[in-house]
Amino acid sequence: MTLHTATAVIDLDALSNNYRLIQSLSPNAKVLAVLKANGYGHGLELIAKALPNADAFGVARIDEALALRAAGIVKPIVLLEGFFAEEDIDTLAANNLQTIVHNEQQLAAIVNANLDVPLKVWLKIDTGMHRLGINPEQLSDFYQALSQSKNVQQPIVLMSHLGCADDKANTATTQQITLFDELTADLPLEKSLANSAGVLLWPESHYQWIRPGLLLYGVSPLSTDVGIDGILPVMTLQSSLIAVREIAAGAAVGYGGTWISEKSTRIGVVAIGYGDGYPRHAPNGTPVLINGRRVPLIGRVSMDMITVDLGAESEDNVGDITTLWGKGLAVEEVAVFATTIPYELLCNITRRVHVQLAK
View 1 (tube, helix red, strand yellow):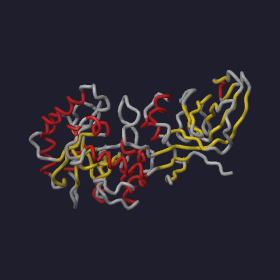
View 2: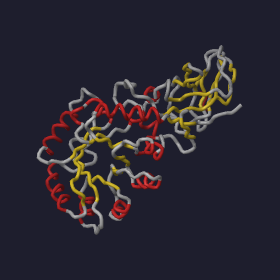
View 3: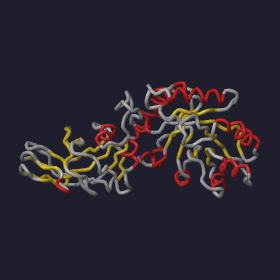
View 4: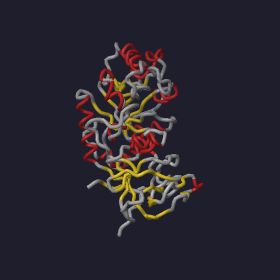
């Protein structure tokens, strides 16, 4: 008997399917596939190599970009937070990395640099999210400085970020799109605004570049929906039963004895816990999939284990595979139980979780 510990099963066919669907929603736009946070927990280099048709990749930090270059990825890579220090500019130039510019310090560092090869720059405008981006009234000055700099490859790309695109009823997105259009109307440049939710709900935000992230991985970015027609989960998080026990009514399970059995039953212990990235705050009743049926999580999540109520008449055995989320159990649903978002669950997968390709 072979026992399996926590394993993220990655379905690259599902990834390709999702990419094709995204392209069909915006056939005239180029795709900047977002791979930050280790490809949303799926494996940075693995996902990049499985997307040969992507026009560019987006990451958050320089070390992610350098890891892609070390893995042989030659496609354009965009630093979605830009660079953090002046000395980073030489690294960008040496590795052909593109950067977002969103503040005065970055602009000054680029303009004053001594570069042999100019950098490709994406200029980020704050259209209402109020996180990163230059103020609208700064656009003219920034554009002129970047356009006239020998250190900047022409033309630049203009971009912003949607803060409420996951909610079709929220008027903030329309306001952001309108402002972006007004600010950039007289600039004949490529533009980018749509994230995953924008791709799905706001076709007027697609422009020349779309930036899908969560949607690539088969997870809904929308605030109300679980599952999008045609989108397939790329990750299925699995482990196995390492113990099956019979307990009597009144028995307490787990740290603190927070769950007490109301009747005699069989419980299962699954080899996964918060040390693997499973949410510690997942409550009693959070679904787990075993042998084609859902069983409830019971007791506190431990570092290495969780317990589930298999039921008095169950026939599950040690070694049986359990699914924590993925095929058959949407990560969006687990996130609701755990009062968090799918992004966090996926990105919290730890290094000790094995990665295995789906067969």
